Image 1 (cartoon, helix red, strand yellow):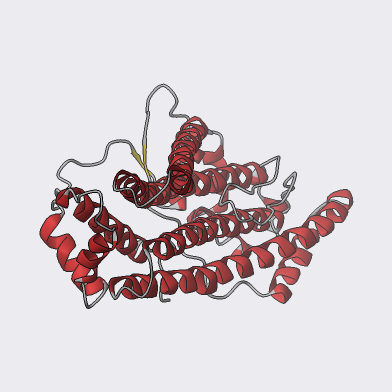
Image 2: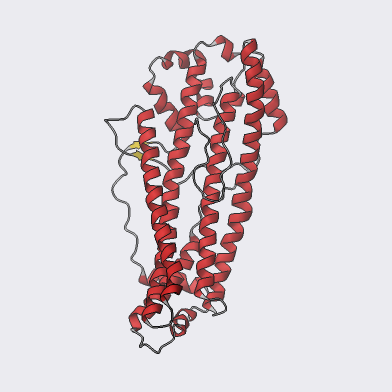
Length: 368
């Protein structure tokens, strides 16, 4: 399956570079009071081929990234399976449950293929429900921790763009081309980006601490090695007909009271899962894709002096918001998928995910 990275920073980075070049040209020339800021824009306009020349400028002027020599420190949790198996170790009594289930069934649970399990296992294997619940908690905690770390990287890129714009505003005020009132919006944008980054870093720390506690590592480990981003959302969701069939199969193994409860839960879980899947695909394949295209085209038009630096800044901000929304939608899908898998094995979440809005912040309902 073709994977499309959910966090594609190239257009945002190009826009930031263009802003940085403009700011640098104004600063380096120390222009006299009567010089208009358009001369600085002329310097950036020298990049006639748009982002191709900007990338060449980046290679020639930005310091090369140092190779990662030292290995990352902390417990390796690069996949959901890593998190699930590590969480099971905390509950030693679950080793017997795994033994009764057999290696093949345990592997399906660890990798999230719960719908492939034989429904009769719920009746035949004692304490299987506890094994599944621990796995569900680990899956969702891992998703939250990876998402929080991913958001930090996104907010860092957003702050860099806001700082470049703010620096430009300061130069323009110093040259007499701007009033203090005109400068205020870009300074506020920088302050907001700085606050968002601070909030994102705290959320990442808290999510990691929660994960460390869940894995029984408190007092032994202070950091986790996580992937840079979540697994991509599958192109096709599980069909509603197949999900309803799985729900009916598990209800046949449950006591009457649990059967009635599970029927209602399954309906809610399936609706949340399908809605989250559609939301994630729209955010990634349409909104984010279009915002990235707009940013790239704005960079090209800006280099040809057909767009202003403020058009570029607006495009950058819009893409930043679209990226945050896409990350949130991606997280919502994996949380909804974890809830659905558990419900289809007789589990009972206290609530289901609600779809994230325009803030990019966590939209997981209370009780998760």
